[in-house]
Length: 243
Image (cartoon, rainbow, N blue to C red; front, side, top):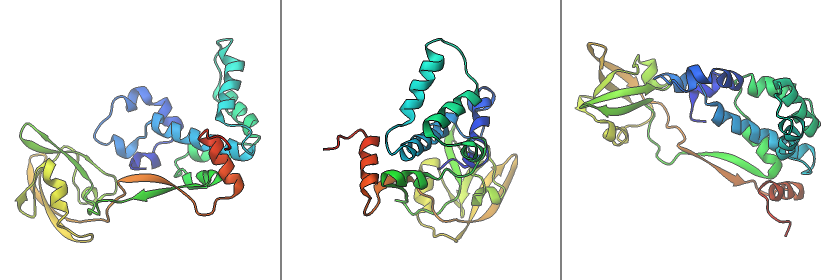
């Protein structure tokens, strides 16, 4: 949820390009890519919840793994993407073409709460710092404060700041990587500051209007008044006894 690239690179492309992109990150990777490990497990979570809901808790993604083992694992033969999808569909008793198009081959936001609701849970974003967003990650290197990445569509990117620029000052005051967060605490959302940087060989100062703060963590909470079915599916999901 904190990786902009999730809305740019499809999961299927991330898997296909792993050796030429994922394992060779560059300063723009977080804006243009998503780890197929991260998104893959999240998509599998949705499929698991979908199967549990469709079968009233009688089956789960575990049944997919068992079926894959029986059909391909025991005999040690390969399988195609289509064969995997067919097995998942047979367990879920549902055509998953639209699901695949939207969340595996597409870049739509994963609808976590639509699926978590089946077990009486909801995902909530939490903002504990309320620090305005500038949109840069800075690290100290050899006595210089180097901007290592700039978030897509962030105030810094919109102002022309690039990864590889050297951060010198904010509103005329020198700032280091370890003090950047503390420095931003003195500003309000919508307030303008002036960022002084070395942009290549040029010393420039750019005006930047700070954006609202971003969530810094996410948590799962139980919804109010879950149904008996939601409570039972939750118990099955987290492997609690019916007692």
